[in-house]
Amino acid sequence: MRWVRAQRIALIALLCSAIATVGVYVWLDVLTVAEATNESIVTASGGSAEISGQELVLGEVVWDEYPAPAGSRLLSIHVRSSGGPEAAMCGIVTLSEQRGERTWLDADDLIDVPYEAGESYCIAESAPYDIVSVFALPADAGGPFFLDIAGEDHRVARFLIEP
Image (cartoon, rainbow, N blue to C red; front, side, top):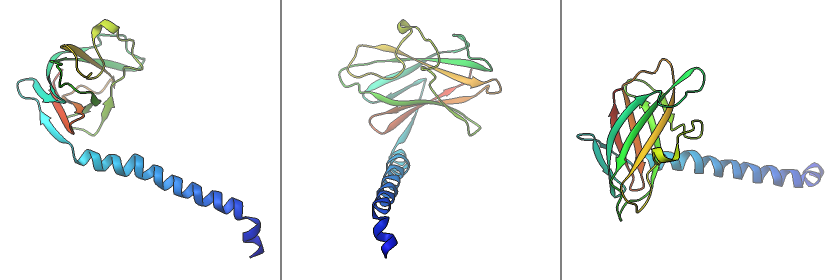
């Protein structure tokens, strides 16, 4: 009993750390998965899909439009957005293998894409604009792929990419 009294500050800190760890786990892992199960996939028909109050139209798909980091190649995907007063922000843009398990996030932090090329994600309440998503892929990734653009309305626009 004397040991517990002597170590009470350390035990309280340990208990607080355990509670914080469980809280962070629930917030980052459990709630994220729960939100993802509420999303519905909107498969693009004729190269266009509507999410977050705007129409997205698949445009040009270009290999190595910009200089690639060593050991990889870049895939640039251009999408045209209708914008409009009802347009809302979009979430994460991902590229995944159609017949595989690999998924990539937009590499806009790694690649120097000119500002005038377009936005890197959907923006709210705007005139029509272009979205340019650039993905750094390993050399063995050749497609076909799915481009997924998550909307604030819990819908994900899915485009088939066959470079």
